Image 1 (cartoon, rainbow, N blue to C red):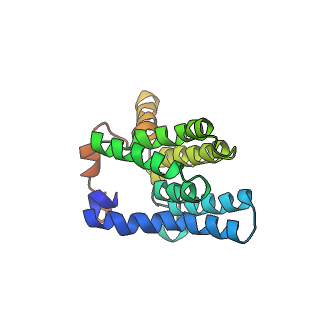
Image 2 (image 1 turned 45 degrees about the vertical axis):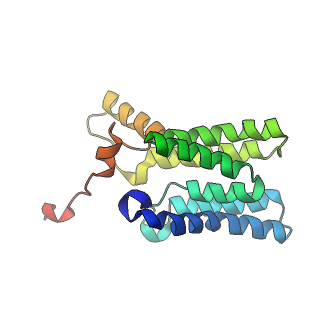
Image 3 (image 1 turned 30 degrees about the vertical axis):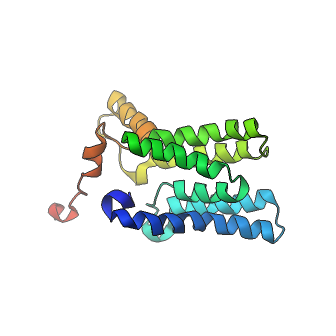
Length: 182
């Protein structure tokens, strides 16, 4: 979102900070001898805090940068693996489905190259966090009327991380003007 809404060059410093936001607690936990489980839990907590920040009324980012930070420390092969999927999605015009594919396939990569067993539960935790974030969509309400329309929106949120079919329209949407209600 930084790329589309702030400035293209800002993706680098923001991305580095997002990666460090989770990599640092995981790395520190490992260095302090807290064990793999506690260290990974610290990184996942950083991701949850990124996705639902208290100071932004629980409306935050998507957590992909923080996931990259966790992989960088606990399974370095997961870092470029996820980046390749995200880059492919970006080149094809929609990285959201590729983010899910990367998280779902990292355990296959770990198994193929003899990576650690904890990659599978970490990947599942990341998928669950991603699914929860996409479906709750920063508390954006579902369309009125229920039924098929709501199911369609939930499916779009799950797969494409948006409520409407057009990615371009979604990026160019305007926030509601709450002052008009007064």
